[in-house]
Image 1 (cartoon, rainbow, N blue to C red):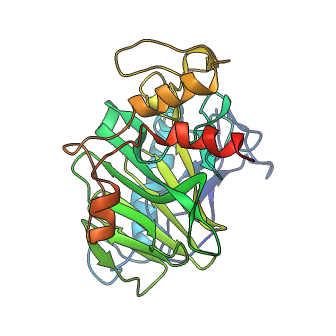
Image 2 (cartoon, rainbow, N blue to C red):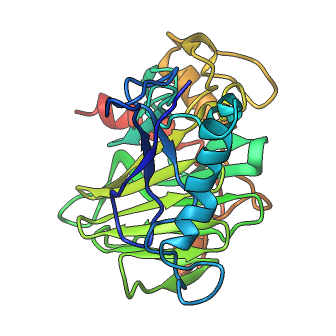
Image 3 (spheres, rainbow, N blue to C red):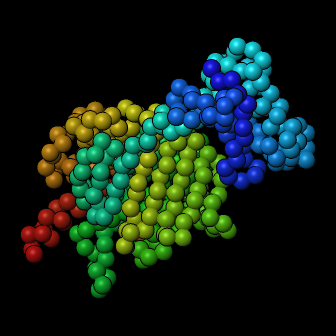
Length: 324
């Protein structure tokens, strides 16, 4: 049981609460159950918390009232230090569980949350991740690459990604028709960044200078969209609460790659499925008019994506290969 004085340790801006490091009478840092060094989180900074000129956030007193005196009452003036440590456990990273990551890039290549790699060469709009947990939906649009002479190729890639969680704002990150300029839409309206980050309804956006946008949702889900050549790449990070709660092109997150090719009706294709079966799997996750989160603000988009999945594109791929 710690029997020393708390000592504030400040790391970060002056308006943020820091950590309490506990020392015994000899000046040695006290050890706690889950850390090599005793350290518990503060609720108030020693310099106050903004707006620190308004009560009860008073420099010095706020930290004393919310942090120091509680340690005195529990650990120095009584035998109840176990309650102090239960309510303010040592905050190291040993209990941290990293999120599961799935990604998609290129023409397009997928790596599911469970590490299964495959390629789906579809043209249309598809559900990448769908989860009843927190009602997270991430959709992606694929578009054929264009030759220098303006003709289309048999290779597709991501040109737009739309997402929402619950009743949050709908965010769409897309390339313009020339596949050069990256733009962000908020509820189908062009969003102009006047700073690198924006806190919106149910979603936090960060706009990087390296042609990338990161969206963070309250559930802990994160989506990173970046320009990569003429197409977009997508990385989705989900905390463990989403375990067994996902479906779509990025698979079922359950540490079992054998069921990542699960269709909407529950049928499962084998992990070594043929190209034809993979095309069927992808087609099964095409969005519908009612479920689409995308913006159709040009005649080109309306005409090209009136059909959410081009079932003839698979034949076009193999005809193109056969003619080479």
